[in-house]
Length: 414
Image (cartoon, rainbow, N blue to C red):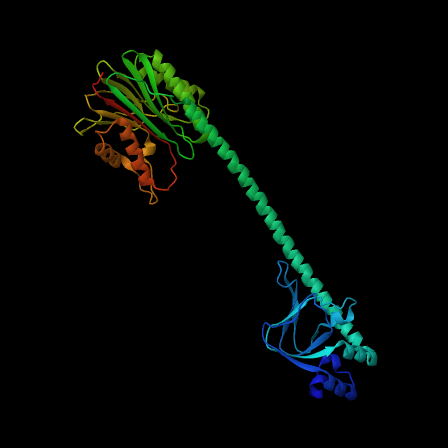
C-alpha cells in the first residue's frame, strides 16, 4: 500500500511518517462491487475499514419490515469501528456497497496498537462517531415523525372507513326494513276467477322504492286491481306505500267508483303527507260478468292491451296527476272492454326506465315487442319472459327503481 495514500486519509493525516509507513505495511486493500455486502448487523466484528474510493450505505434491520437507511459513507470515512470499541464485539448495522468501492482493512490487534501509540486517534474517532450517532439519531427521529404522521393518517382513514361501514350497515338495515315493509303489504296469493288468469311479478331495486300492487275482492262480480309507485326510496317510501295501499283498499270497498276512491285517497294523503312525497296509481275494477275494466289513472303509465290476434289496442288517455301533493288533482278515468284471449298488462315505470351500461332505457317500444313475442304463452310465462328480457337489457347495471308487472288474461274458460 502506498504510504502517500494513507497520509491523505483525514483520520491518519496527523500521524508521523514512521507510523504511516507501518500502516502501509499492515493494512490490506479490499475491492467491492456495487451491491456487495461488507458487514451484516449482528455478526462478530474483528476489523474496521477506511474508504479510499466509492460509497457505501449504512443500513439498520436489513431485509426486515423495519429496514431503514442510517446514512452513506464515502472517501476518507471509516466503517465497522463500533464492533472494535464495544464490549459485545458485534456489528451494530449492515454496510453495503453503493458503487465500486476500494478500502483498507485493519484488524483488532493493529487497531489497538495504533490507539496505544497515538491516543489522539481515539479522540478523532470519537468525534466522528459522535457526529455519526447524532446524524443517525436525527434520521431515526425523522423516521419516527414520518411514521407517526402515517399512523395518524391511517387512524384518520380507519375512523373514516369505520364511519362508512357503520353508515353502510345502517343503510342496509334500513333497506332490509323497507323490503320487509314492502313484502308484508303485498298479497300472499292471487284470487281465483272463472274465465280470468292472473299473474304478478316484482323485482325490487337495491334502493328499495315504493312499488305496490293489490287485488281487492269487492263482490262476486267485481275485482279491484291496483298498481302504484311512490316517488321516494327506502324506508320513507315503503311507509308511504303501505299507507297508500291501505287507503286504496279501504276507499275501494266503500266508494261507488274508482274515481271516487282515488279522490278520497288523495284527500287523505294530503292531510298526512308531511314529507311531501307523491304516488302514481292505476286503480281499476274488473267486472267479471261483463268483462269490462273501468279504471282511473293518477299519473301512472298507461296500461297495454294485447288482443288474442297480437294486435295492440291504442289506449285512450287524458290528464292524470299523481296523488298526495296537488290541490284539485286531475285524474284520467277510462273504460275498456276485454275480449276473449286478450291480455291486459299493468306495470310500473321501473320497467321502461331500466337502463344498460350505455344509459339506454328499455322503453315502451321494446316492452310492446316483448309482449307480442310471447303473447300466446300462459300469463305466468309471459311475465317471466318480460322481466328476463328487461334484465338482459340492463345487464349488470344497478337499477334505481322497482319493477312491477301485473297481467290479466280473459280466457273464457269456466
